[in-house]
View (cartoon, rainbow, N blue to C red):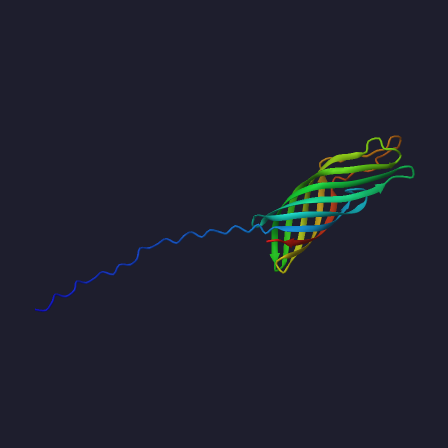
Length: 197
């Protein structure tokens, strides 16, 4: 007799496996270091130039933090019988948001603060209260940067600062104020930066 036919076999499909949810990769720290030339009007007497160094990195795309140090050398003012020098040093901390990207061009807006000291020096006559005066300000800037070969950055920014305290420097026996910062201090910044990783 012929052997019985094989029983039909059911095809078993492998069980469905749910795909793993996609997790957005966090941006790399992408740390950069900048050297900057600064310009400000009446931060110290008159138009003045300063320098700054800063570093920044991602908090979360498109937000970065920026930490820096600002220095404006002494600028002199005074009449025929007095000469004064005012300089400024400050640490800065800003939060910056990328507003647009167009190829290698990046637009950024920043808001932050600065804290440091105004250095008051009286050369003549003999000073009564020379030294450092605490200084702080709220800062804002609008910056346009160009990325070069994904490593170097050139940036130009318009800046503004609102001092928390506006010291009025006077001379005994003379009328008026020798120097006082305005309510809003306009300025600019030209920066060159390099990315380390």
